[in-house]
Length: 143
Image (cartoon, rainbow, N blue to C red; front, side, top):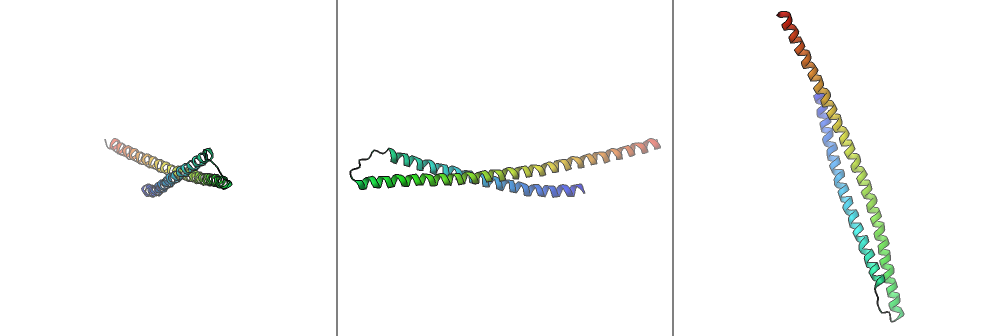
């Protein structure tokens, strides 16, 4: 009875282990996306700062308008990159939470198997002691 239960628990543990590994891979991918989004955000900010700090000669109004459009476009790129970074960080947090829950669930099942194994071993030792006591009692009666 106990060995069948332990085999079932073992199969469940394997399922939980695969789920935990899958969750870990999803977290790693989400983290990589977050790092990439942060890099894009940082690059966009550097480009904007370079454009703002650029000391270009402006001779006509058209050049001023073009520079203004360029800087505004770069600023919008920063805002979009910041939004993408926030989305990526939120997805990473969700993936981390999922991974943590999967690891906790796996540990619960491993603990359950350990407890069942200890109980089974204790039951076997008790049966062995009872059998040894019966053999000792028979030999004492016979002898």
